[in-house]
Length: 445
Length: 153
Image 1: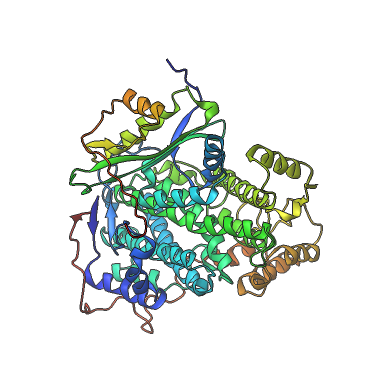
Image 2 (image 1 turned 135 degrees about the horizontal axis):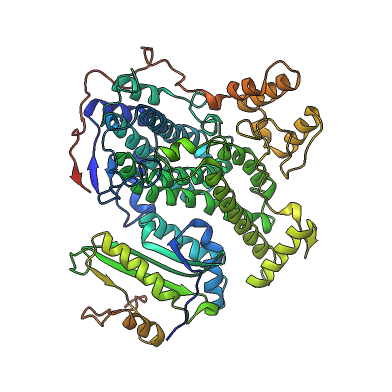
């Protein structure tokens, strides 16, 4: 594995961004050994894996050498790739802004530190994507300078990020956990697919990011399991209903991160990903289903400690089969996977009136009442939810077409919220600041 | 000679495997210890998730093996792959699950630059000792020493 730093002025820009949006970074580093003894100390740098496959692994150019420069790609292929790198960078920096909102509300210090470490690693992942932008010449597919590409990414805020899931505010620490468990899981799929990218620098960037992503999932799933057990013991903290509503908030956004269910073929043809959107989305749904089952098993075993594994599985299977009550545990006491069409604003089921368990609604008011009951209270007070409701009303009233309603959502915005030419806030300083990193040191990690 | 299962897939450890791994441990030891396995899985997944693998058959995890590469310990400077945790569902024993797990993890160690693979086995666990011997492991000169730290000692 090789280790690289960005040229000094860009490295400094990321550090400046970190000081603004990740102010607890120094606290994390100072206390690293308390929670992560023996783990390698975090470092803000880009890693590239050595020894990955040299040949294109899927698509029209399968078997040909992987491209090491954007100029060697077909212009359309390079355009797709640049879009993917910018979107990936946006998600990495965006998630930090979201987590920071509620990080301090964690009840448990260990869980808080896990999230903090995860935020630092997301910063490194964003840094990794900037490294891809800066380490190559993209002038064949964009007029933006290197400075502007970085500036655009660092200028995005919750509400102006490229993907919808990163434009939704967190309201409590339950969001931190569910986001890691569901949205980072989509990230894992994207990174896994990009591991085979025909663009070698992208493929080389993925292995270390994937290693770190595995811990990010744990940072979400472990608190969820603990809350399920606490709920089963009737402790008054996070209820299964709280968890369910938060799953309902994030799961639809996670599904939309895969892109439209009818698409993805171009990326496969270009050798940038091995799966179309629907294939990857199906696997994701199956995996989240396993997670939900695991959470329910933890609940049942905490609620009835006398059951062994096989007995607990039988109880869960009976409850799920008839949606009834077994040994005092009701279907409503557990958590469930929402329907894939529920509360969607993009893709095939966009703005369908599909309930969280797949039920259909005749009219919008009934559907909005359903959403009121199945989404978190704080989320329904958000700008994001209001935007959804307004578009749904306009669509029903014939004021906008479905295409317009979909396009109007923040998730389809394609540029940063702050114009790159704005001088109001500049992350990339023209003059390098003190303490600049060594540019492109290329040392072995 | 052991028979093999046809549909076994060896893959990296995932967070959603916890329930099955806890279940295997429960079948072996009789205790339900989700917190213990949760901590172990979190530890190994943040150290090096590629160095921990599971065997899956019919949608269920039937075996697992956790490890990592370390160097500089006990005067051994060379990158060394350590196999530290192993479990196979009692219902799936005798089907070469452990061997497939070990071959997968050792292949990863080799590709990652490790030149040696090590493990430690309780002398009373004769079956485990035989298992590692069947994989080519030999007793090493490095011996564990232990001392109880009681009050006033």
